[in-house]
Amino acid sequence: MIPDSFKKRNFATVLNYFWMKKILSALLFLCLAAFALAGQEIRNIDETVVIRPDGSAEITQVWDVNVVSGTEFYLPFDHLGPIDISNLRVSENGEDFIAEGDGWDTDRTREQKRGRCGIVRKENGVELCWGQGDYGDHLWTVRYTVSGLVMKMGEYNGLYFSFVNSGLSAPPQHVKVMLVNETGGPEWTEENVKVWGFRSDSEIFVEDGAVRAESLSPFRSSSAMTVLVRFDPDLLSPAVEYDKGFEAIMDIAFKGSDYVDKSSFGDVAILLLALIAFLLFTPVGWIILAGIIFLIFLFNYHVLGWKYEKKIFGARKVKGWYRDVPLKGSIPAGYYVLAKGDAMSAWDKDYANNLIGAYFLRWVLADVVEVLPDPENKSRVNLSFKQQTSFTEPLENDLYAMVREASGKNLILEADELEKWSKKSFKRMSDVPSRALTIGRKWFEDRHYTEKSDRLNKEGQEQARHLIEFKNFLEDFTLSKERGAIEVTLWQDYLVYAALFGIADKVAKQFEKLYPAEFNQFSRILNGSSLATVISYSGNISASALKNARVASSWSSSSSSSSSGSSHRSSGGGGHFSSGGGHHSFGGSHGGGSR
Image (tube, rainbow, N blue to C red; front, top):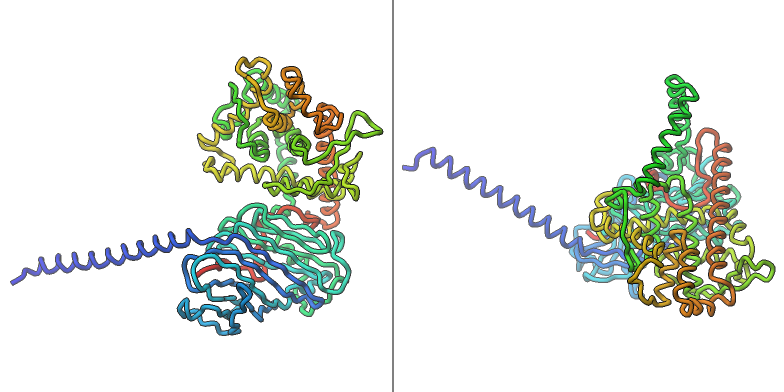
């Protein structure tokens, strides 16, 4: 006879074992799934959107991927409203998939879906699906038709669409979307087409009669490519008319975005603080207090040497020397450290000027750009950009392309050409420092040198200190007893970083004094101009170009704010995407990729 108490305990033990086994199995499945997804890759998405006169579009996407799990690839589109997506076609290696149209059956095996594609219709959206076939690398070409992509929205015609979702099975490493004009109407220009982008580290411009949106760094899982475009009424005649005007769509898209000018709130806060200060202190007392605070800061900065932010350097004072070129020679990484780590950077705009000047000097010293003496002014030079070249860093490529464009038909940058170009293309030029900050921050993130945003860990702080120690070394080079012989190619790197520090002229003089023979080798690439003239020119032209870009940008912002009343919106001239905003876009969804 088995006691009842034993039966109850035994049953409970079996039950607990049963549930524990199920939980462990579920955890094991999740771990295996996570491990499989870790191998997923979406290397590139290249998307061409051909827009027709009626506002419909033919979209072609090329997906460069590596798949390691699942039976199919899918792209969800939600919140379509009056938009319709149809006519899905997929091909790979020149072979067309069998198009099943609507009614795609997701509950099939990988083999049953191989070489086939179709659409799943949902209540307010669709899923475009195709069979993945074998695991491994794929290069799929996906085509589909979107009716109503551009709609009539009150006074203007508008497009507000998410071309790439967040939450894909693997974040894309690079995304490019081109909107191509096949409307038969006027050419698209910055005057008749306004553009904005949301939710990723990307840029968007109207250029060469098309709209280009392209990522500047790999996507995160939360990144998306959401685009808002306003077309003047005479550019096309959409077949679909939306029940809201473009201003209402802008209100939705701009909510929480960087495009909204928060100065109205800031103005109220400043007025409130000024009122409090007026009530608590006399005007003289306020001036004295402000002066004391500033004197304390100057005392800490110059006398005590507390020049640096601890979150970047781990200390407020950095001493010692570092002989090697720091940060693997990355100009954006160096700029990031200086701009974020110098306690005076809030007042000092020279780092941004030095950034562009450093690139100029690098090109000259690497013999990528030819120095031509200016026959009308011996204190300056002209630069020939006839050499078409490419760099590993996208920002350097873009900056080179900007200056080459500014140099005109003869591709020789002459007096005031870059300054004049910067007034017209102010957004592209003024975005260079912010893009450098983003790239510089990512340089540290890729090497796991960060704890959180704009705070470096111990390894990162050590790398940041090397930058200042290297600056100390360059400034005190003549005092170093262990300086030894330095190769000319290494001097080129030294001078480029010295330009970033704003001390290139001083370092060049030391170089000439200590190593006259090596210094004379530079004369071969300077065509008789002095290195001092080239350094001065690089710094001056960079400062002038950025200044003109900032002035033009400020004028454009104020003009846009005054013309749009209290909304204070961006002019739509293109530039960097907003990290926020872009909500409730047509087609906007989450997820996609392998499943």
